[in-house]
Figure 1 (spheres, protein in one colour):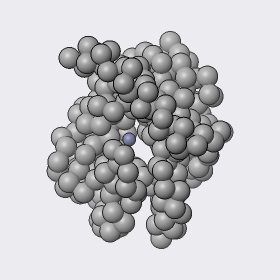
Figure 2: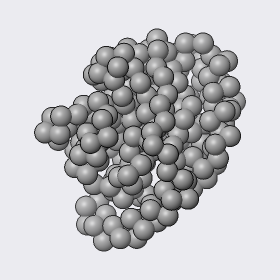
Figure 3: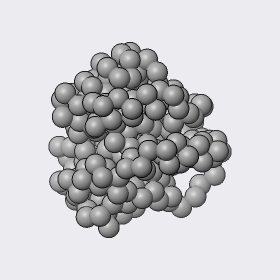
Figure 4: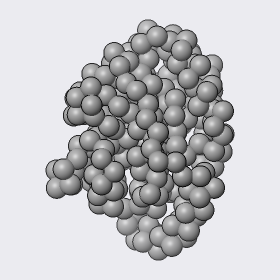
Length: 235
Ligand SMILES: [Zn+2]
């Protein structure tokens, strides 16, 4: 079985503190086979990771976390920036047009930096004949969500749609939370994972448990310490 963490941020996100090589190294160390770097409305870090991945012995799916009018949306297997601010449906169809697939991250969650899709927005997309072929999964476990009740609600939503893939991700903003949420699938490559997403044959795995407060504290320290570096890289 393969393990993937499909929601990781780097310094190319306004709120990420990890460098791209740092993420790749950490992901390999914790035993992940496939990762996606999904910075907020930015694809540079993800493309850089895709290029560097072979040196680290890990597979990278290019991706982005798009800010839609209704909330955040993960777009995977895309190599171009997806314009933020459009409606959820329009954004999903655009992702499909460029050959990508989508996952609804931390559904219904509210909190630091999380602009989440509502249950009704996700249901509307899943009932749309075209969008439902692109929106393949729901993040039923997000290791960075502070409210654990959210996971229960996300699982209940997934229960309503047999065939939807259940995805576990870290939503890591610091190196040490990479892999704390992961998705298990048959095989070990990005192609295997895509197939598993298509047929909803994924399982959610939770990594070693850090307290949320500890993750938040570590993020704050890293965020402050890495600010000069981040400005230098992004500019
Ligand atoms: Zn995120």
